[in-house]
Length: 533
Image (cartoon, rainbow, N blue to C red; front, side, top):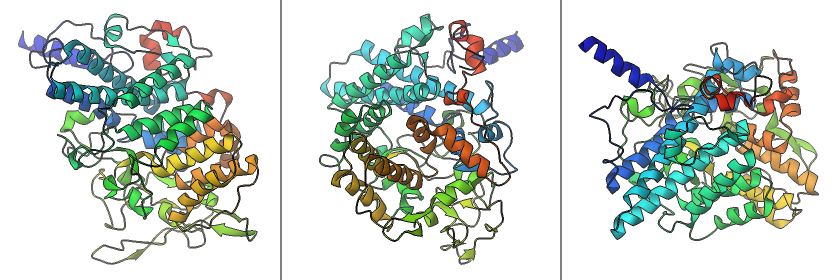
Protein backbone atom coordinates (compact mmCIF):
# COMPACT_ATOMS: atom_id res chain seq x y z
CA UNK A 1 0.00 0.00 0.00
CA UNK A 2 2.78 2.46 0.92
CA UNK A 3 4.40 1.78 -2.44
CA UNK A 4 1.17 2.63 -4.29
CA UNK A 5 0.63 5.81 -2.26
CA UNK A 6 4.18 6.92 -3.05
CA UNK A 7 3.57 6.33 -6.75
CA UNK A 8 0.34 8.33 -6.69
CA UNK A 9 2.03 11.25 -4.98
CA UNK A 10 4.82 11.14 -7.54
CA UNK A 11 2.29 11.22 -10.38
CA UNK A 12 0.47 14.11 -8.73
CA UNK A 13 3.70 16.07 -8.54
CA UNK A 14 4.33 15.57 -12.24
CA UNK A 15 0.91 16.69 -13.44
CA UNK A 16 1.17 20.19 -14.88
CA UNK A 17 -1.18 23.07 -15.50
CA UNK A 18 -2.05 24.44 -18.94
CA UNK A 19 1.03 25.75 -20.68
CA UNK A 20 3.22 24.86 -17.78
CA UNK A 21 0.57 25.03 -15.02
CA UNK A 22 -2.36 22.81 -16.00
CA UNK A 23 -5.00 21.92 -13.42
CA UNK A 24 -4.35 18.59 -11.73
CA UNK A 25 -6.70 15.72 -12.53
CA UNK A 26 -6.15 14.25 -9.08
CA UNK A 27 -7.84 15.35 -5.88
CA UNK A 28 -5.05 14.34 -3.53
CA UNK A 29 -4.38 16.97 -0.87
CA UNK A 30 -0.82 17.60 0.26
CA UNK A 31 -1.20 18.37 3.96
CA UNK A 32 2.13 20.22 3.98
CA UNK A 33 1.25 22.50 1.07
CA UNK A 34 -0.01 26.06 1.31
CA UNK A 35 -3.81 26.03 1.44
CA UNK A 36 -5.62 28.26 -1.03
CA UNK A 37 -8.47 29.11 1.35
CA UNK A 38 -6.53 29.67 4.57
CA UNK A 39 -2.89 30.48 3.88
CA UNK A 40 -2.98 33.75 1.92
CA UNK A 41 -4.58 35.79 4.69
CA UNK A 42 -1.70 37.94 5.93
CA UNK A 43 0.75 40.31 4.33
CA UNK A 44 3.71 37.97 4.82
CA UNK A 45 2.01 35.20 2.88
CA UNK A 46 1.07 37.57 0.04
CA UNK A 47 4.67 38.76 -0.07
CA UNK A 48 5.83 35.15 -0.43
CA UNK A 49 3.34 34.62 -3.26
CA UNK A 50 4.62 37.77 -4.96
CA UNK A 51 8.23 36.62 -4.67
CA UNK A 52 7.16 33.25 -6.09
CA UNK A 53 5.93 35.15 -9.14
CA UNK A 54 9.40 36.66 -9.56
CA UNK A 55 10.87 33.16 -9.24
CA UNK A 56 9.50 32.21 -12.65
CA UNK A 57 11.97 34.65 -14.20
CA UNK A 58 14.56 31.99 -13.40
CA UNK A 59 12.55 29.02 -14.66
CA UNK A 60 13.41 27.06 -17.83
CA UNK A 61 13.06 29.19 -20.94
CA UNK A 62 13.77 32.41 -19.12
CA UNK A 63 16.70 34.27 -17.63
CA UNK A 64 18.66 31.54 -15.89
CA UNK A 65 19.66 29.96 -19.18
CA UNK A 66 17.50 29.57 -22.29
CA UNK A 67 16.42 33.20 -22.71
CA UNK A 68 19.83 34.45 -23.74
CA UNK A 69 20.36 31.51 -26.09
CA UNK A 70 17.00 32.01 -27.81
CA UNK A 71 17.38 35.67 -28.58
CA UNK A 72 21.14 35.95 -29.02
CA UNK A 73 21.12 33.06 -31.52
CA UNK A 74 17.94 34.04 -33.33
CA UNK A 75 19.05 37.69 -33.46
CA UNK A 76 22.37 36.48 -34.93
CA UNK A 77 24.45 38.19 -32.28
CA UNK A 78 25.72 34.81 -31.12
CA UNK A 79 26.60 31.84 -33.29
CA UNK A 80 26.96 28.34 -31.97
CA UNK A 81 30.27 26.61 -31.41
CA UNK A 82 30.58 22.88 -32.03
CA UNK A 83 29.71 22.12 -28.42
CA UNK A 84 26.21 23.59 -28.75
CA UNK A 85 23.70 20.97 -29.95
CA UNK A 86 20.02 20.11 -29.74
CA UNK A 87 17.46 22.86 -29.18
CA UNK A 88 20.05 25.65 -29.27
CA UNK A 89 21.51 24.46 -32.57
CA UNK A 90 18.00 24.61 -34.06
CA UNK A 91 17.63 28.22 -32.93
CA UNK A 92 20.82 29.37 -34.58
CA UNK A 93 20.03 27.90 -37.98
CA UNK A 94 16.24 28.37 -37.82
CA UNK A 95 15.62 24.65 -38.22
CA UNK A 96 13.39 24.44 -35.14
CA UNK A 97 9.89 23.01 -35.26
CA UNK A 98 6.93 22.89 -32.91
CA UNK A 99 8.80 20.76 -30.38
CA UNK A 100 11.82 22.99 -29.77
CA UNK A 101 12.56 22.55 -26.07
CA UNK A 102 13.73 26.11 -25.43
CA UNK A 103 10.76 27.81 -27.06
CA UNK A 104 8.37 25.38 -25.36
CA UNK A 105 9.98 26.12 -22.00
CA UNK A 106 9.66 29.86 -22.63
CA UNK A 107 5.94 29.52 -23.39
CA UNK A 108 5.37 27.34 -20.32
CA UNK A 109 7.26 29.57 -17.90
CA UNK A 110 5.52 32.71 -19.15
CA UNK A 111 2.15 31.09 -18.48
CA UNK A 112 3.40 29.84 -15.12
CA UNK A 113 4.25 33.46 -14.30
CA UNK A 114 0.73 34.48 -15.34
CA UNK A 115 -0.79 31.73 -13.21
CA UNK A 116 1.12 32.83 -10.12
CA UNK A 117 0.35 36.52 -10.60
CA UNK A 118 -3.34 35.68 -11.08
CA UNK A 119 -3.24 33.79 -7.78
CA UNK A 120 -1.83 36.83 -5.95
CA UNK A 121 -4.51 39.08 -7.44
CA UNK A 122 -7.24 36.58 -6.56
CA UNK A 123 -6.15 36.11 -2.95
CA UNK A 124 -5.54 39.83 -2.42
CA UNK A 125 -9.15 40.53 -3.40
CA UNK A 126 -10.44 37.79 -1.11
CA UNK A 127 -8.44 38.93 1.90
CA UNK A 128 -9.18 42.69 1.66
CA UNK A 129 -7.28 43.85 4.78
CA UNK A 130 -8.46 46.83 6.80
CA UNK A 131 -5.14 47.80 8.42
CA UNK A 132 -3.59 50.79 6.65
CA UNK A 133 -0.08 49.29 6.54
CA UNK A 134 -1.35 45.98 5.20
CA UNK A 135 -3.44 47.70 2.54
CA UNK A 136 -0.45 49.77 1.39
CA UNK A 137 1.77 46.71 1.08
CA UNK A 138 -0.97 44.79 -0.67
CA UNK A 139 -1.39 47.55 -3.25
CA UNK A 140 2.37 47.50 -3.80
CA UNK A 141 2.36 43.74 -4.38
CA UNK A 142 -0.59 44.03 -6.76
CA UNK A 143 1.30 46.60 -8.82
CA UNK A 144 4.37 44.35 -8.90
CA UNK A 145 2.50 41.28 -10.13
CA UNK A 146 0.59 43.31 -12.72
CA UNK A 147 3.95 44.36 -14.12
CA UNK A 148 5.07 40.72 -14.21
CA UNK A 149 1.84 39.61 -15.88
CA UNK A 150 2.24 42.37 -18.46
CA UNK A 151 5.86 41.34 -19.00
CA UNK A 152 4.75 37.76 -19.67
CA UNK A 153 1.99 38.73 -22.08
CA UNK A 154 4.31 41.21 -23.83
CA UNK A 155 6.52 38.28 -24.78
CA UNK A 156 3.65 36.01 -25.69
CA UNK A 157 1.91 38.47 -27.99
CA UNK A 158 5.15 39.71 -29.59
CA UNK A 159 6.48 36.22 -30.28
CA UNK A 160 3.30 34.17 -30.86
CA UNK A 161 0.62 36.71 -31.78
CA UNK A 162 -2.85 35.48 -30.79
CA UNK A 163 -2.60 33.61 -27.47
CA UNK A 164 -4.93 32.41 -24.70
CA UNK A 165 -5.65 35.31 -22.34
CA UNK A 166 -5.95 34.20 -18.71
CA UNK A 167 -6.64 37.18 -16.48
CA UNK A 168 -7.94 35.56 -13.31
CA UNK A 169 -7.13 32.53 -11.21
CA UNK A 170 -10.62 31.04 -11.27
CA UNK A 171 -10.63 30.85 -15.07
CA UNK A 172 -7.46 28.79 -14.95
CA UNK A 173 -9.12 26.40 -12.52
CA UNK A 174 -12.54 26.14 -14.13
CA UNK A 175 -11.96 26.70 -17.84
CA UNK A 176 -8.50 25.56 -18.70
CA UNK A 177 -9.03 25.32 -22.45
CA UNK A 178 -9.27 28.95 -23.48
CA UNK A 179 -9.14 29.74 -27.17
CA UNK A 180 -6.59 32.19 -28.49
CA UNK A 181 -7.50 35.84 -28.04
CA UNK A 182 -6.73 38.34 -30.81
CA UNK A 183 -3.39 40.06 -30.36
CA UNK A 184 -5.17 43.41 -30.07
CA UNK A 185 -6.99 42.20 -26.96
CA UNK A 186 -3.75 40.98 -25.43
CA UNK A 187 -2.12 44.38 -26.02
CA UNK A 188 -5.10 46.06 -24.34
CA UNK A 189 -4.72 43.85 -21.28
CA UNK A 190 -1.01 44.64 -21.10
CA UNK A 191 -1.73 48.36 -21.23
CA UNK A 192 -4.45 47.98 -18.57
CA UNK A 193 -2.14 46.13 -16.18
CA UNK A 194 0.68 48.64 -16.57
CA UNK A 195 -1.58 51.69 -16.37
CA UNK A 196 -3.08 50.39 -13.12
CA UNK A 197 0.37 49.55 -11.75
CA UNK A 198 1.66 53.03 -12.58
CA UNK A 199 -1.32 54.59 -10.79
CA UNK A 200 -0.52 52.70 -7.57
CA UNK A 201 0.86 55.35 -5.24
CA UNK A 202 2.22 52.65 -2.95
CA UNK A 203 4.66 51.33 -5.59
CA UNK A 204 8.13 52.68 -4.66
CA UNK A 205 10.48 54.51 -6.99
CA UNK A 206 13.41 52.96 -5.10
CA UNK A 207 13.88 50.07 -2.65
CA UNK A 208 16.32 49.42 0.17
CA UNK A 209 19.35 47.32 -0.72
CA UNK A 210 17.81 44.08 0.53
CA UNK A 211 14.94 44.43 -1.95
CA UNK A 212 16.82 45.45 -5.07
CA UNK A 213 15.27 43.71 -8.06
CA UNK A 214 11.64 44.32 -7.15
CA UNK A 215 9.52 46.23 -9.63
CA UNK A 216 9.67 49.99 -9.20
CA UNK A 217 7.34 52.59 -10.63
CA UNK A 218 10.11 53.47 -13.05
CA UNK A 219 10.15 49.90 -14.35
CA UNK A 220 6.39 50.03 -14.93
CA UNK A 221 6.69 53.30 -16.84
CA UNK A 222 9.57 51.98 -18.94
CA UNK A 223 7.70 48.82 -19.90
CA UNK A 224 4.52 50.76 -20.69
CA UNK A 225 6.50 53.09 -22.95
CA UNK A 226 8.01 50.06 -24.65
CA UNK A 227 4.56 48.53 -25.13
CA UNK A 228 3.36 51.73 -26.81
CA UNK A 229 6.50 51.85 -28.96
CA UNK A 230 5.97 48.30 -30.20
CA UNK A 231 2.44 49.25 -31.25
CA UNK A 232 3.74 52.37 -33.03
CA UNK A 233 1.94 54.64 -30.58
CA UNK A 234 4.78 57.11 -30.74
CA UNK A 235 3.20 59.96 -28.77
CA UNK A 236 2.17 57.92 -25.71
CA UNK A 237 5.55 56.14 -25.80
CA UNK A 238 7.36 59.48 -25.72
CA UNK A 239 5.18 60.68 -22.83
CA UNK A 240 6.03 57.64 -20.71
CA UNK A 241 9.75 57.64 -21.44
CA UNK A 242 10.08 61.36 -20.70
CA UNK A 243 8.79 60.78 -17.17
CA UNK A 244 11.98 58.86 -16.41
CA UNK A 245 14.31 61.67 -17.46
CA UNK A 246 13.91 63.67 -14.24
CA UNK A 247 12.55 63.81 -10.68
CA UNK A 248 11.35 61.84 -8.82
CA UNK A 249 13.50 59.39 -10.80
CA UNK A 250 17.27 59.52 -10.35
CA UNK A 251 18.40 57.21 -13.14
CA UNK A 252 21.78 58.06 -14.64
CA UNK A 253 24.05 56.52 -17.22
CA UNK A 254 26.76 54.63 -15.38
CA UNK A 255 30.08 56.41 -15.97
CA UNK A 256 31.55 52.97 -16.73
CA UNK A 257 29.93 50.99 -19.52
CA UNK A 258 31.80 47.90 -18.30
CA UNK A 259 30.31 48.20 -14.82
CA UNK A 260 26.79 47.76 -16.21
CA UNK A 261 27.71 44.12 -16.94
CA UNK A 262 30.07 43.45 -14.03
CA UNK A 263 29.78 41.52 -10.78
CA UNK A 264 28.86 44.81 -9.05
CA UNK A 265 26.19 45.91 -11.51
CA UNK A 266 23.27 45.42 -9.11
CA UNK A 267 23.80 48.98 -7.82
CA UNK A 268 24.47 50.81 -11.08
CA UNK A 269 22.29 53.96 -11.36
CA UNK A 270 21.38 52.79 -14.85
CA UNK A 271 19.24 49.84 -13.66
CA UNK A 272 15.52 50.16 -14.27
CA UNK A 273 14.61 46.49 -14.08
CA UNK A 274 17.10 43.69 -13.55
CA UNK A 275 17.17 39.96 -12.96
CA UNK A 276 18.75 39.41 -9.56
CA UNK A 277 21.68 37.03 -9.66
CA UNK A 278 22.77 38.34 -6.28
CA UNK A 279 21.18 37.44 -2.95
CA UNK A 280 17.96 39.35 -2.31
CA UNK A 281 14.91 39.29 0.04
CA UNK A 282 14.81 35.75 1.47
CA UNK A 283 16.74 34.27 -1.46
CA UNK A 284 20.23 32.92 -1.04
CA UNK A 285 22.60 31.07 -3.35
CA UNK A 286 21.62 27.51 -4.24
CA UNK A 287 22.75 24.82 -6.65
CA UNK A 288 24.39 26.16 -9.83
CA UNK A 289 22.93 23.24 -11.78
CA UNK A 290 19.24 24.03 -11.14
CA UNK A 291 18.96 25.61 -14.60
CA UNK A 292 19.03 22.23 -16.32
CA UNK A 293 15.33 21.50 -16.03
CA UNK A 294 14.41 22.61 -12.51
CA UNK A 295 12.61 25.64 -11.16
CA UNK A 296 14.81 27.99 -9.17
CA UNK A 297 13.03 27.46 -5.86
CA UNK A 298 13.39 23.66 -6.09
CA UNK A 299 17.08 23.79 -5.28
CA UNK A 300 17.42 26.27 -2.48
CA UNK A 301 16.04 29.48 -3.97
CA UNK A 302 19.12 30.09 -6.05
CA UNK A 303 19.70 33.42 -7.74
CA UNK A 304 22.48 33.12 -10.28
CA UNK A 305 22.92 32.68 -14.04
CA UNK A 306 24.89 30.15 -16.08
CA UNK A 307 25.58 32.58 -18.89
CA UNK A 308 29.17 33.47 -17.97
CA UNK A 309 30.37 29.87 -18.02
CA UNK A 310 28.27 28.77 -20.99
CA UNK A 311 29.38 31.70 -23.15
CA UNK A 312 32.82 31.71 -21.54
CA UNK A 313 35.59 31.06 -24.04
CA UNK A 314 37.87 29.68 -21.32
CA UNK A 315 35.11 27.48 -19.91
CA UNK A 316 32.24 25.78 -21.79
CA UNK A 317 32.67 27.98 -24.91
CA UNK A 318 29.25 27.12 -26.37
CA UNK A 319 29.01 30.21 -28.61
CA UNK A 320 30.98 32.83 -30.45
CA UNK A 321 29.91 36.39 -31.08
CA UNK A 322 28.87 36.43 -34.74
CA UNK A 323 31.06 37.98 -37.42
CA UNK A 324 28.25 40.32 -38.43
CA UNK A 325 27.95 41.60 -34.86
CA UNK A 326 31.70 42.25 -34.76
CA UNK A 327 31.69 44.02 -38.13
CA UNK A 328 28.88 46.33 -37.03
CA UNK A 329 31.27 48.04 -34.61
CA UNK A 330 33.26 49.41 -37.56
CA UNK A 331 31.39 52.01 -39.60
CA UNK A 332 31.93 55.33 -41.33
CA UNK A 333 32.48 58.51 -39.34
CA UNK A 334 30.35 61.05 -41.25
CA UNK A 335 32.64 63.91 -40.23
CA UNK A 336 35.73 62.34 -41.82
CA UNK A 337 34.33 59.81 -44.28
CA UNK A 338 36.77 57.29 -42.82
CA UNK A 339 36.16 53.89 -41.18
CA UNK A 340 35.71 54.20 -37.43
CA UNK A 341 35.83 51.46 -34.78
CA UNK A 342 33.39 52.06 -31.96
CA UNK A 343 35.00 51.93 -28.48
CA UNK A 344 32.14 49.75 -27.19
CA UNK A 345 33.72 46.90 -29.15
CA UNK A 346 36.37 46.37 -26.47
CA UNK A 347 33.64 46.09 -23.83
CA UNK A 348 31.59 43.63 -25.87
CA UNK A 349 33.98 41.02 -27.26
CA UNK A 350 37.53 39.65 -27.25
CA UNK A 351 39.32 39.63 -30.60
CA UNK A 352 41.94 41.51 -32.54
CA UNK A 353 43.13 45.06 -32.05
CA UNK A 354 41.98 45.81 -35.59
CA UNK A 355 38.43 44.72 -34.80
CA UNK A 356 38.35 46.80 -31.63
CA UNK A 357 37.94 43.75 -29.40
CA UNK A 358 39.79 43.41 -26.11
CA UNK A 359 43.05 41.52 -26.53
CA UNK A 360 43.87 40.95 -22.84
CA UNK A 361 42.17 39.28 -19.89
CA UNK A 362 42.90 38.42 -16.24
CA UNK A 363 44.00 41.99 -15.58
CA UNK A 364 43.11 41.62 -11.88
CA UNK A 365 44.17 37.99 -11.44
CA UNK A 366 46.98 37.19 -9.01
CA UNK A 367 48.86 35.62 -11.91
CA UNK A 368 48.73 38.83 -13.91
CA UNK A 369 47.26 39.87 -17.25
CA UNK A 370 47.22 37.40 -20.12
CA UNK A 371 46.82 37.69 -23.88
CA UNK A 372 43.56 36.53 -25.45
CA UNK A 373 44.62 33.10 -26.79
CA UNK A 374 42.42 32.63 -29.88
CA UNK A 375 43.08 33.66 -33.46
CA UNK A 376 40.31 35.99 -34.53
CA UNK A 377 42.08 36.60 -37.86
CA UNK A 378 40.98 33.12 -38.95
CA UNK A 379 38.33 33.34 -41.74
CA UNK A 380 35.78 31.83 -39.35
CA UNK A 381 36.40 34.72 -36.96
CA UNK A 382 37.27 33.43 -33.51
CA UNK A 383 35.74 36.34 -31.64
CA UNK A 384 34.44 35.63 -28.13
CA UNK A 385 32.05 37.30 -25.72
CA UNK A 386 33.29 39.72 -23.07
CA UNK A 387 29.97 41.30 -22.10
CA UNK A 388 28.49 39.62 -18.99
CA UNK A 389 31.80 37.82 -18.45
CA UNK A 390 34.27 38.50 -15.64
CA UNK A 391 37.51 37.14 -17.01
CA UNK A 392 39.12 40.35 -15.83
CA UNK A 393 38.89 38.85 -12.32
CA UNK A 394 39.42 35.11 -12.85
CA UNK A 395 40.99 32.88 -15.47
CA UNK A 396 38.27 30.20 -15.22
CA UNK A 397 34.91 30.06 -13.45
CA UNK A 398 34.60 26.54 -12.06
CA UNK A 399 30.78 26.42 -11.86
CA UNK A 400 27.93 27.43 -14.19
CA UNK A 401 26.94 30.31 -11.98
CA UNK A 402 27.38 34.03 -12.27
CA UNK A 403 26.49 36.85 -9.87
CA UNK A 404 26.12 39.38 -12.71
CA UNK A 405 22.55 40.65 -12.76
CA UNK A 406 20.66 40.46 -16.05
CA UNK A 407 19.72 43.81 -17.57
CA UNK A 408 16.07 43.74 -18.66
CA UNK A 409 15.52 47.49 -19.02
CA UNK A 410 18.23 50.06 -18.39
CA UNK A 411 18.43 53.81 -18.91
CA UNK A 412 20.44 53.74 -22.17
CA UNK A 413 17.78 51.47 -23.68
CA UNK A 414 15.03 53.88 -22.60
CA UNK A 415 16.93 56.91 -23.92
CA UNK A 416 17.28 55.27 -27.32
CA UNK A 417 13.61 54.25 -27.35
CA UNK A 418 12.68 57.85 -26.48
CA UNK A 419 14.84 59.11 -29.35
CA UNK A 420 13.16 56.61 -31.65
CA UNK A 421 9.68 57.76 -30.61
CA UNK A 422 10.70 61.35 -31.38
CA UNK A 423 12.25 60.48 -34.74
CA UNK A 424 9.21 58.46 -35.79
CA UNK A 425 7.10 61.57 -35.23
CA UNK A 426 9.35 63.55 -37.56
CA UNK A 427 11.58 65.19 -34.94
CA UNK A 428 15.20 64.68 -35.99
CA UNK A 429 16.52 67.76 -34.22
CA UNK A 430 18.27 68.52 -30.97
CA UNK A 431 16.14 66.34 -28.65
CA UNK A 432 16.85 62.91 -30.19
CA UNK A 433 20.37 64.01 -31.13
CA UNK A 434 21.15 64.82 -27.48
CA UNK A 435 19.82 61.46 -26.32
CA UNK A 436 21.87 59.49 -28.83
CA UNK A 437 25.01 61.53 -28.20
CA UNK A 438 24.64 61.13 -24.43
CA UNK A 439 24.68 57.36 -24.81
CA UNK A 440 27.69 57.56 -27.14
CA UNK A 441 29.60 60.03 -24.95
CA UNK A 442 29.59 57.63 -22.01
CA UNK A 443 31.78 55.23 -24.06
CA UNK A 444 33.81 58.08 -25.63
CA UNK A 445 32.48 57.47 -29.14
CA UNK A 446 32.46 60.41 -31.54
CA UNK A 447 29.39 62.64 -31.31
CA UNK A 448 27.01 63.38 -34.16
CA UNK A 449 26.33 67.00 -35.07
CA UNK A 450 23.16 66.19 -36.99
CA UNK A 451 20.87 63.21 -37.57
CA UNK A 452 19.82 64.30 -41.05
CA UNK A 453 16.38 63.40 -42.35
CA UNK A 454 14.07 60.81 -40.82
CA UNK A 455 15.45 57.87 -42.81
CA UNK A 456 19.05 58.72 -41.91
CA UNK A 457 18.12 59.35 -38.29
CA UNK A 458 16.51 55.92 -38.07
CA UNK A 459 19.60 54.28 -39.57
CA UNK A 460 21.74 55.94 -36.90
CA UNK A 461 19.25 54.96 -34.19
CA UNK A 462 19.16 51.34 -35.36
CA UNK A 463 22.94 51.08 -35.30
CA UNK A 464 23.08 52.67 -31.86
CA UNK A 465 20.71 50.06 -30.48
CA UNK A 466 22.69 47.28 -32.13
CA UNK A 467 26.00 48.42 -30.64
CA UNK A 468 24.87 49.64 -27.23
CA UNK A 469 22.60 46.66 -26.53
CA UNK A 470 24.58 43.90 -28.24
CA UNK A 471 24.18 40.63 -26.34
CA UNK A 472 21.27 41.94 -24.26
CA UNK A 473 18.55 40.01 -26.13
CA UNK A 474 17.14 43.18 -27.71
CA UNK A 475 18.12 42.89 -31.36
CA UNK A 476 15.73 40.08 -32.30
CA UNK A 477 12.80 42.11 -30.97
CA UNK A 478 14.06 45.29 -32.65
CA UNK A 479 14.43 43.66 -36.08
CA UNK A 480 11.01 42.06 -35.70
CA UNK A 481 9.15 45.26 -34.85
CA UNK A 482 11.02 47.27 -37.48
CA UNK A 483 9.84 44.77 -40.10
CA UNK A 484 13.35 44.03 -41.39
CA UNK A 485 14.18 40.77 -39.66
CA UNK A 486 13.92 38.45 -42.68
CA UNK A 487 16.18 40.40 -45.01
CA UNK A 488 18.63 41.27 -42.23
CA UNK A 489 19.08 37.77 -40.82
CA UNK A 490 19.27 36.17 -44.27
CA UNK A 491 21.84 38.68 -45.52
CA UNK A 492 24.01 38.21 -42.44
CA UNK A 493 23.75 34.42 -42.47
CA UNK A 494 24.58 34.30 -46.17
CA UNK A 495 27.76 36.29 -45.53
CA UNK A 496 28.79 34.38 -42.39
CA UNK A 497 31.85 32.14 -43.03
CA UNK A 498 30.85 28.50 -42.84
CA UNK A 499 27.09 29.29 -43.03
CA UNK A 500 26.16 30.74 -46.40
CA UNK A 501 22.42 30.09 -46.07
CA UNK A 502 19.28 32.20 -45.90
CA UNK A 503 17.26 30.31 -43.27
CA UNK A 504 14.62 32.86 -42.24
CA UNK A 505 11.24 32.07 -43.80
CA UNK A 506 8.00 34.03 -43.61
CA UNK A 507 6.62 31.58 -41.04
CA UNK A 508 9.40 32.58 -38.64
CA UNK A 509 7.77 35.98 -38.09
CA UNK A 510 5.90 34.14 -35.33
CA UNK A 511 7.13 31.33 -33.12
CA UNK A 512 5.33 28.01 -33.63
CA UNK A 513 2.68 27.13 -31.05
CA UNK A 514 4.44 24.46 -28.92
CA UNK A 515 3.30 20.86 -29.15
CA UNK A 516 2.83 20.81 -25.39
CA UNK A 517 0.03 23.36 -25.76
CA UNK A 518 -1.51 21.90 -28.90
CA UNK A 519 -1.66 18.45 -27.36
CA UNK A 520 -3.39 19.74 -24.25
CA UNK A 521 -5.73 22.49 -25.45
CA UNK A 522 -8.04 21.49 -28.32
CA UNK A 523 -9.32 25.05 -28.71
CA UNK A 524 -5.81 26.25 -29.45
CA UNK A 525 -4.96 23.26 -31.64
CA UNK A 526 -7.94 23.75 -33.96
CA UNK A 527 -6.93 27.37 -34.62
CA UNK A 528 -3.40 26.61 -35.85
CA UNK A 529 -2.64 26.90 -39.55
CA UNK A 530 -0.08 24.84 -41.43
CA UNK A 531 0.92 23.09 -38.23
CA UNK A 532 2.81 26.21 -37.12
CA UNK A 533 0.84 29.09 -35.66
